[in-house]
Image 1 (cartoon, helix red, strand yellow):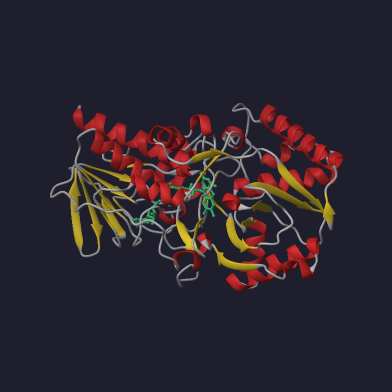
Image 2 (cartoon, helix red, strand yellow):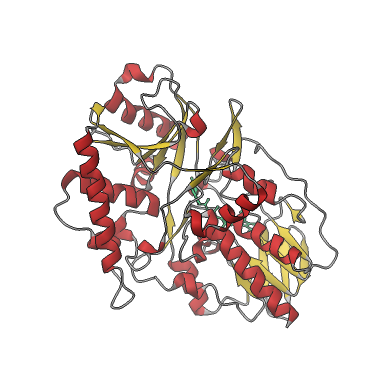
Length: 434
Ligand SMILES: Cc1cc2nc3c(=O)[nH]c(=O)nc-3n(C[C@H](O)[C@H](O)[C@H](O)COP(=O)(O)OP(=O)(O)OC[C@H]3O[C@@H](n4cnc5c(N)ncnc54)[C@H](O)[C@@H]3O)c2cc1C
């Protein structure tokens, strides 16, 4: 396991919110100042309950962070506001007058060394539609669970392989590793972007909250009454705790005294690690023009799992790495520079080496090596589809969980994490007021 600072933590974020000091005797402690923790803290505060947040990093935002690259705000974690109609961060952003814009549905297509033809784009669109229909139809809660890959219709040919790769990329694992019952819950349509970055937006929402930074929690004693939370050389007491630590981090540490009930512990350890990493390209002469559009590169020698072009209409683009690609790179200890070499080789195979004359790769994210994330999001493997719900029930009415892993409809996303933070905080507030 690597211990050096992951590359995405080298920059200071674009926005550092002004934080308030801790209240003397908080009723509730929130562990983690990502989307879920910030939602929980804002909600408890709005309901008049004193709350304090402990965050391990020296910044807020967790897996949402926006940093300045060549003067432009670039997200090194989450970037899309998915599932617009049900995403609480879209609802809140609209009410606050945040600079949201609707993401284009259309995408570019590049086949081998040329632009894709209209008929090829139509064939890819049909393959996506067929696969989505087949997977949604077969993903019932009755009967045993199975891998999402087993529901893909046969005979889709090369376009089918592209569909499988894209679904694997956005799932965080190849579809053979993903629960079919869990898979279709995500509502991908109707996405938004936000000027200034998703991380910048979340940092604005943390303004004025009582968050202590640089305070990794090392123990949570829930033997009662209330809870005692250890961080640094201090133990803090409260009536309840909301834990938003990523499941991939929680399963590596013995945090709880007494140990969690077996069903809760099994839910946490049963998640797989989702991998999705950005290589940020600065490429002024990129052949794709316009703003914020996905590009499918197919038929090359090297695979490009995903490409988002012209972010905010700038020369910045995201080359996305999926789990198989990251695993292959890690197996040969390639590091961030190995990622850069692979990205260049992949793009050169499609566009020719000369087209890359002005390409630079200023940043590569490494969330899978980040000690406070250990991956991009939690993935439900086949047979584990009840895990999200299992974590929603409080433990002894003192310990609540929240975070992306718990969200059924918006799994793996910041919107889902925020929704779960709202839910947990409301449940705690109801409990304390009862
Ligand atoms: C590269 C990448 C791209 C993504 N793209 C998108 C996207 O486009 N759209 C989208 O919606 N989502 C996306 N996601 C997922 C999204 O970022 C996450 O689902 C969401 O931010 C998770 O929020 P959270 O509050 O559950 O967890 P986190 O943001 O991880 O917050 C948990 C917090 O707990 C802290 N912590 C951990 N351990 C401790 C401890 N022991 N003590 C105290 N604090 C601790 C962490 O530092 C962190 O700040 C992406 C993620 C990655 C990595």
